[in-house]
Image (cartoon, rainbow, N blue to C red; front, side, top):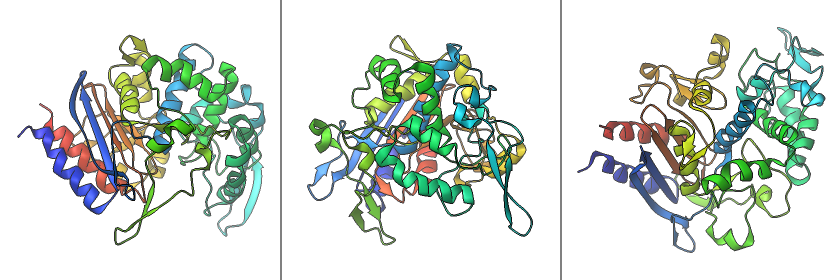
Length: 383
């Protein structure tokens, strides 16, 4: 048996105890090593996953956003160490919440400005909504209204009114940094975020089913999202689909795109081949090298402490493998990528000219179980 075919029983086991359906595409040096799908896009209708199934890719959007921003970097529109306020003046003189040893909270000016690079590396002090800090609580309250009413420029201005969780550049914290990066792309390009992505990435590569909204003629191709109970029972989750409806202005750089496995594979292949696919160049190999280099300090690496990311650092918007022994990884130092909330995942390895795209739609995603196993089987099959 071809060793790459060991993926088939693995993927079937995922569907038995996890998502209703899943799909995987593995490409190396232009050759499709593996491409298959299992299970259902819609359990009730018994509709199988197919090559044209559309998925909510959530945070896999981030890799596209950071690539788009680096295209503007290569055109000389900004430098990574530039203060963000030069382009988004709402971030001039940011404030920071500080806590003493007793947990008492104060607000004072940030010790330094947010740099553009801090948006890429999640070291800006911006957070997602949550309960852990006052920044997270205020962000959560603001974001509850954002999807219904705001575009990315308006979102950026609202986020800038909330004091940061820490001084820029001092810590790593997953948050809305890449949504603000989308606003920066809009200001620098003079286009909406989606207009820029369509013109510079989607249309040139032929990513015809990648967008922020689901059109009526494609609605029946959108994979159903499921919540998974502890016993594995799946129930439909449509609570989070407001941003994808026609007419919504919200184009999240951090998690807003819909795509197919074929579309995203074209994008991933371009990055795996040094930034170019079928005569379309997105970035130079040198810029991709910068993207897939760890940019975190020792303190920030301590903050980037997700267990299934052991051995990884964080580059310009992507995880990047630094130490294979720490995570027990058989992949290449410098392989990079990211994952989406509902379990989608990409791995890109320019050294091997390898790209991997996995799709599913389930919460919780079981990412720490699924993704490392896919990686170990794929690399175990390479010659």
